[in-house]
Amino acid sequence: MKRAMRLRATTVLSRGLGGIAVALLALIPVGPSSITAVQSAAQPQIDLPTIPDPVPVSLEASSTALVLADFASVGCAQEPGCAPLIAPLAELLGRARAAGVRVVYTSYAAPAADELEGLPQLRPLSSEPFIARASGAANWAGVDGILADYRVKTLILTGFVANNVVMYGASILGRFGYTIVVPEDGIGARSDFDLFLAKYQMLYLGNPTNEPLRPNAVTLSRTDLISFD
Image (spheres, helix red, strand yellow):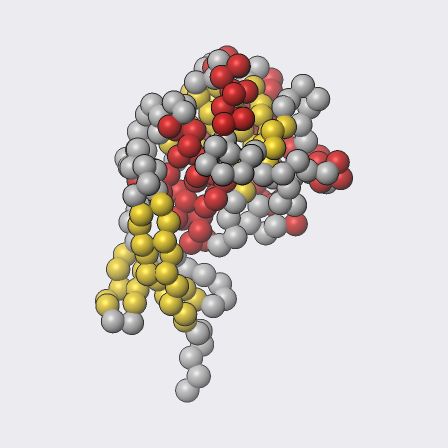
């Protein structure tokens, strides 16, 4: 009898904060994905670790920056894993601007004008910098330079995709000395597993219990749980 769902073995190898590699061997459904367990043909089902719930944070507006990474250059409105982020981020962006929080945009390439026009809810103001990151290991150095000029200590890091620009950006920016807040409804990925992996890796070494605002580490929050002093 034909099985209702074909399974394929996928090995995911990634590096967490501090450079520790974690290998996960998973049978991923071809079709709608489930991330409730990791399993192999030779082993019994293995439950995935639990990610702590998002926590509320209150941030000092004068020393906080909101970073929006790669939304324009990836065509967020056309990406199923990105489009749902637009509304909560637009609400957070409005509150952040009203509170005097610095807003910084960044991308792996300078977007064309029509790409920015295609995302009106998140479009930068003329006073807000848009930084095209350099390639290679120092690709967040230009962002750090702007943030240092603003005397920023805490970042709200958002972006698409979570298992690339957000996960690696958090690692680099943490080493630069920032305390980082990642709202879970402000990051997206192209699969549920990719999103799970990013959140797990960001918390794994620096803040596995999701203690609010642990220095130089990631706190997992949500846009409606972020407030400004």
